[in-house]
Length: 400
Image (cartoon, rainbow, N blue to C red):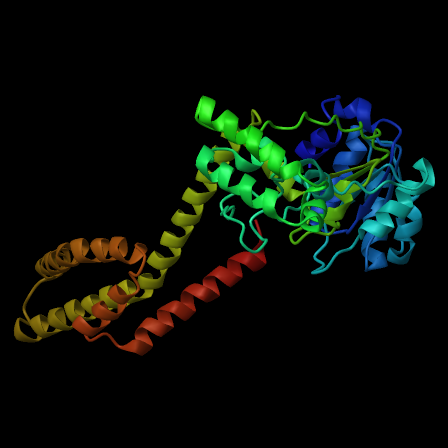
């Protein structure tokens, strides 16, 4: 949110840019709440909150109004009043869970037009086409034309030297002869005047025979674009998928910053290295969490295995007492402890290793293998799992 506001401010300090502005926040979820709080701390004078659920908008407005660190005027508005609020707002932040557009280009144009007059739609695609297009050509299309201009870039005319750039003199002379023998109607309709092609192509052929080639196309002089007016309506779209129509980029008097433009701006921003570090931290934590979850999956099996081993030890000690009834307590305790140490040492390495293997991707099969190898009772494993889940729920209910 802070980085988005910096992009809206166009290099000016955010506090100065935001001072005394009226803001409209669309949505009342966690991201919209953060946006509203950030706007309030930045110094906007008023925040209107629109949400499909009026109660959530009213609750967020109340929270903003009760803040001790800001004196912003916060109010909740219904969603159907958004078009009217666009005529008042200087800044609009939208972050909803809608699957379609929340703000269309027409609604934005109408809102900005209340302060600037009718907004001008700047069609960048049409401007680019007007700069590069030089008009159609019929060269090489007439019957009997000796030139094969299929490789020539569209938009060239044979009357310009660029149209035949790189062609040899012999080919140009052939075309000159063909053009001279053609009808006046064909020459007039295709080239603009009788005999124009014959004279021009002949001159170009002479140039080609002298210098070896026709000069390459000269690029047209760049046309200075008229300056766009200063924006009076600032839009910040933080939703995925987008809430605000991308056509708003072409509206004069409107500045739209969305997820795509934030991604482009952040690539060269000083915080780009911090973003990469955060991504690595998140990736490492997600991997560690996944490993812990997979390792926890095998814990009931390991507990069941150790329980079975303890039962075996207890059974063998009971048999020993039956065979040696005169065994005193000291020797019985020593023998029992020795047997348990032997069992623990035998199980230690396999159980530790199986937990490590189970933490790796695809490690769930090790629990099944352990149950099969030691013929563990599935009900015993399930009972351990139920006991662990009950313990976790009790801990959650008790709270910190």
